[in-house]
Length: 495
Image 1 (spheres, one colour):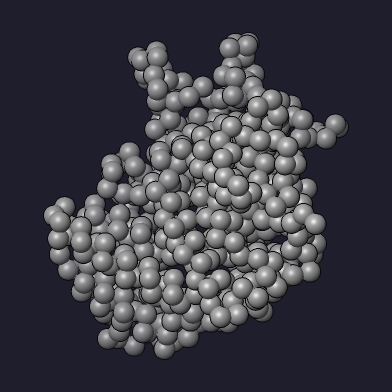
Image 2 (cartoon, rainbow, N blue to C red; image 1 turned 60 degrees about the vertical axis):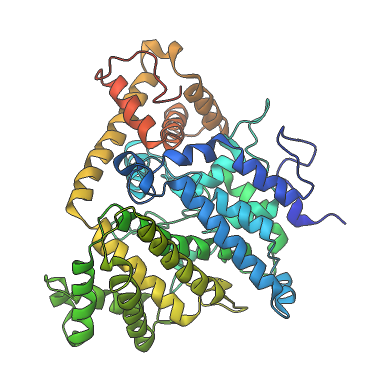
């Protein structure tokens, strides 16, 4: 009997030119790595735009490669543990090739300028273009592998196996309708399934597929029915998700240290003030006042509110101490100067932390609602939360980054409006072929009788087109459309 996990969306007879591997899951890995959507990740923002910091920082491509490396290491370790394979099979399987393929694909749909671009496109999609599904990077990744990646004469995506498609689904639900009851109504909801604070009727904040791809998602999840809950990640998706967390917490710290953004003094003051001062008795409102230690105390309280299933004060305090000792007093003690010694220190820090986190991974047969079947142990979970806090507090919250991002957000909004105007212009016959193809695809997806069918198809096509640009392509295209570029033939963007 054929393995249902290896079943493809459009059958096995459609062979791509690069299909050289014998394993169907390895074929998937190669199809993803050979996709132009994967190549474009080299020009996409991870934390800092590659155009603003050069080769010192990770982009979405190098981030995806590191997530794949960590994910495969986790999968191999879990399968090698005594009795581990039996538990994994009971939950639906954990193949290292599936995990690696999903890790390479997990960011395919992220738009220019990282999470800022994701928020801008979602707002435009829902409020300006009246697209009920809006925009979501994870759902866009799933859309790419199932539909918008062109192969041969058919628009079939990458035609991946069910197991790999299911492993890409970090959030295996749509924004509003699947599954029923929808996970956003659970108490507590799964991580990511809650509604946006400013839009309680807007559906889930995070989701893995648009309504146009729900049938594809159902087929991908079919082999796991009865093994895991409808709203729960597969084991392989859980491995990919955990590896993504590890890569973000550790490898992205390398970037901000290398470019001199992360300063020892500010981080040390925050952590040491919390350790030396009792802030636990402060009312919540006083935590918003300026003062060292207050921000991380706010994190401790937030963890108890959202993740009471694992939050522990002793583990949190131990994590703060470990990060202070190894990051603040270790890596950040000397500014990065590009020397061999500095490079060795970065490599040693990254390797030590990555190994500690990977080796702490556990398989949980009955996980908490806000967790997955594969998770960090309690101590290491708290360490990751503290590392991510440092990124959020001392990098993402910087005013200079906010200034840069406001400009990027305005650029994307103007770009969307300019392309929409072109679609309704008498000059539409010279519209870029890619946009024309995307309009036809989006129109075919919408049922007959859909209100403003053409308008919504155009809106989805523009969003698909803009989301597939690199940072520099978005900037270059906007310069041309605004008349600021004198260059007629340029490789800054692809039409």
